[in-house]
Length: 139
Image (cartoon, rainbow, N blue to C red; front, side, top):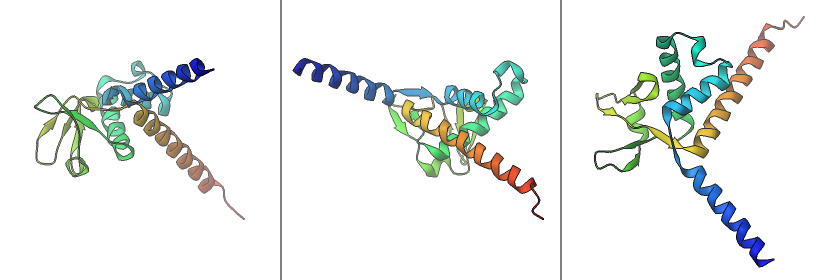
């Protein structure tokens, strides 16, 4: 019985550790694109795909923390004030702050990525539902 508890605790600890691992923002944006549109990358021109990923990356960062690797090669959170007024480039691979500073090696925690994608999908569904409701005319 005691061994089973240890096994369950080990599995739980491994799951928590996996959830905290970083995932590239571009990968998260690509997954969100697929979830939101139902299309593969091949279904759109490369330029349009990268523009869509930039927009999705910006939306994802509204729902979750963004991290980057700094000059000392440490993973640090990008403060919200740096995100304000900036823009994503190259499909979410690069972030240019309002002052022109470039942030590369962008990532987020795996569990945050999952939650952010779910939030975007739910928001899109709610907007689609509101749009359909607005089309219905009440006599």
